[in-house]
Image (cartoon, rainbow, N blue to C red; front, side):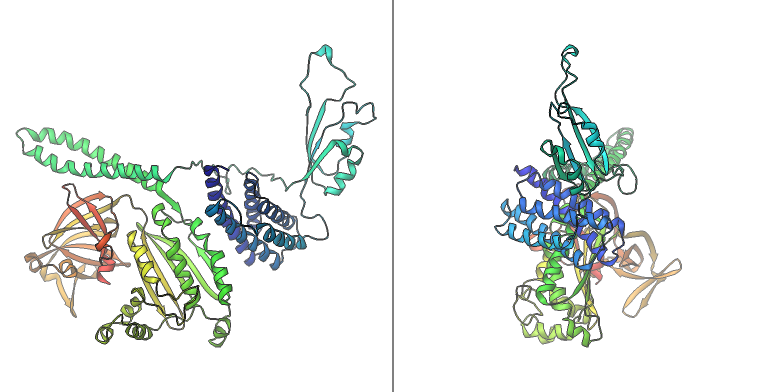
Length: 622
């Protein structure tokens, strides 16, 4: 078993178990969904074939039994809930075995026992017949003296019931025609039959010493080269992540070099007779700009990966956690087709797993408690992903007990995380944010699920490390939402550069709607803030210097230069000293002592070597 082959098998195996799990979950809700049943059968069938490349008999036998069960369902056997439950357990077990293979290169010692137990349960579902068999593969090699024995091989094969395919070939390559012996049988028959195994055996009982029979799964009659929707197939290759990372680093360096051309062109303009040269260079610079932008876009897309494999790891873990806690939960994942940078996806498993476990442990109540509160016994837990501009938002939402902000304040004070004076200044949103403090936990007792005082602070640190942010919302008695906002790509971002208080800052271009000049007489006070009329809409106005704690510019009292940005779905104007220009840059998350700097999404390198701080406007005004 080579490392490369095993790696590919693990990747494909997890994709197939994810698909089978999603299909079975859908069948739980809609047992008549034929497309889902077919999809699940194909996933298990493909996985069984891949397992055959390795010495994994326990997994192979279990998948073969599962395939037979699914084949019986496709032929019309009734789909019972307990059958689907058993198949879900099979998929979960295979997923665990894949983890064991990744960790230790083999299955655990109890694999055979577990496999036999689940196989026996599947056998009970198909007991009473051979409905699980969708066909029989036949290989018939007649004896050379078959004709003298009175056998007619062609007639024998023609008598096989349910014959579907038949291929006749020569056992030995033909020699010279002069040596041909018409009384010697030199034929080989290979066929498939849709009849039950015992009927095929009966038809071939007189030549049973010359045949090989093997039950096979039903052969798909429709071509699948065009995909599920009949479109052209997508060709893919697997590339080492390190190669893509190296390509991204090279394109980032190229981008910095491209940005540095602007200052060089300004120097050429200042030379005698240099304007004509600079104009020609600018034409070429524009071409280079387009090519570099296209290259960065291609590299960024190459690094994107769908969330489906990540999401596929959670249903089993949620089921196991809920079972350990004695709770009933309906868990759904939506948005697995959303794509995001692979480096970000690789760092999401642990934070999301902790958030889901918290929701199960602290959020969703026990069945008897839910009944007393007038709720259904089964709680609802969801993981949803959706794109928003150049960001992706992931939400973990539950309909559990929720969190009381007053209780959070009290717990934080009791644990010495804040003092009384600080607690009194916090509004409800700020109080809920205390759950991200190191050492904070709402658990009353320590358990294997949660409650060790390390959790949501680690979640925020992990998400911040990749340039994202975490928010928490809750309504007592109704439920909670943990929202992760993440960049789609870590390769390149369009930035608007502004100057404020003598410093330059970057604003993400996808958040900027427009830039305007606003006369002071158009600005009106609204309580302790300001606003201005932007066409037919009153728009809040905030001085960026105030948000950053910088001295105000004298221009703030005359004509304001305003960047209108879309923040949390609403337009907000930010007054700045100067609008410097725009650039494409590789934005990297903050690290070290600056990792948790509020209101900063990351940093980028300017053409002159200076570091540009890229602002997170939503976090700045929150």
